[in-house]
Image (cartoon, rainbow, N blue to C red):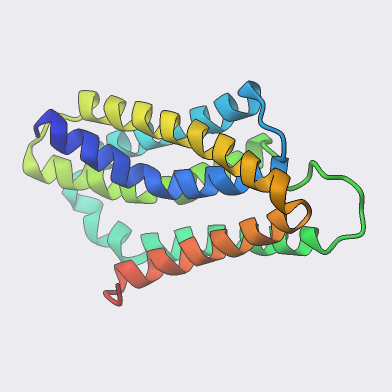
Length: 187
């Protein structure tokens, strides 16, 4: 696989992570390099790791994964999105809840946004492609795009105020619906 194809693949795979990063940035309100780096590292690492896992699982598990990967991503994103929407209507003053970048929240989001990368790894195994360098490039691109997404989201979050978390939750649910529609052939 040539470098241009890998870069384009990395950009394409990073789009879900970018959208979630924008949501996180909106919920945070104020951008910090630390938060941007943490979110970028989670998404970048999983976009690097999942193609490796997919590659080594190979085509023997392809039918198992492709039958339900989109539903797993949808459920994870919908649950987190619904929780963000619920928290947006909460009377509590704690502004940091939607901006949670704790281990469990980020783990779930990183898995949900990188399931497609697992499938890419499987397809690369079937092609007989090299995996380590493309996976690293995909991870680095996702890291950079995610940090940018957090920054962009924080700009919008400052302007949207308390509605940012509501909007972020809706966006996560829509991303989940989009994933299901793409994998079922409706998009």
